[in-house]
Image (tube, rainbow, N blue to C red; front, side):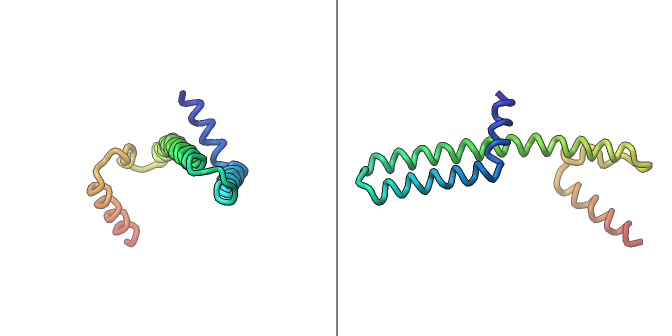
Length: 112
């Protein structure tokens, strides 16, 4: 299931997919507005676009979470390789207040 979601996110994140989806949306809206297809047609188009939007949004969120985890892994490996303390590893799991304090400490230390 994850592979399918990642593939969909990769497909929908392309400029071509954006152009195709926008074109389909405009054509469907044009057809409904300037032809007499009726309210049921417009309701169906609206429903389809809403479901598609929610699906794309969720696929992008899942893909973003994967990328975020990979980025943290890379940063942790860089921190481990550096000749310094390793207290920043796992920082993404700490409380925001603790992170804010550590950022202030680093800024003060860097100005010395």
